[in-house]
Length: 102
Image 1 (cartoon, rainbow, N blue to C red):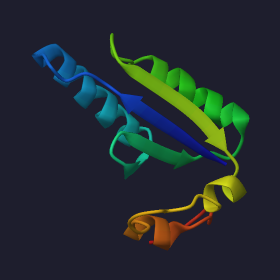
Image 2 (cartoon, rainbow, N blue to C red):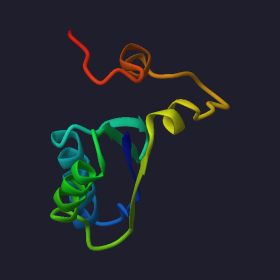
Image 3 (cartoon, helix red, strand yellow):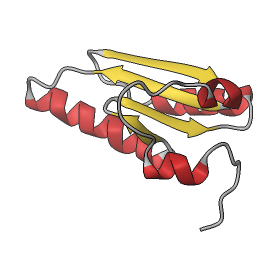
Image 4 (spheres, rainbow, N blue to C red):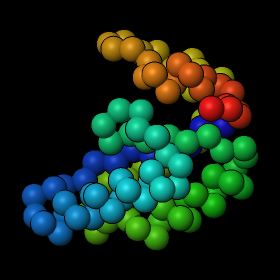
C-alpha cells in the first residue's frame, strides 16, 4: 500500500519557513518521495507499518497549517489519473514493484 502525506503550511515568518523545511526533510529521511508540491508518498507493507510512520511524522509537526495522511492500496494508487503532466521518472521506474534493484 502507499501512504500519502499532504500538507499546506504557512511560510510567512522565519519560524514557519523553518518548520516547513523540517517537515519536508523529515519526510524524505523517512523514505517519502515527492509526488507533487506538498504531496509526498511512500510504500508501506501494511497498516501497522503505516501507523509507525504516522507516529514518526507526529514528532515533527509544525504549529500551524494542515498535514493530512491517507493510505491507499497499490491498485488505488495505480488507478490515479494524471490529467495534466506526466509520471515522474521514479514513478515510471518503480511502478508497483515492492523491491527495485538499482
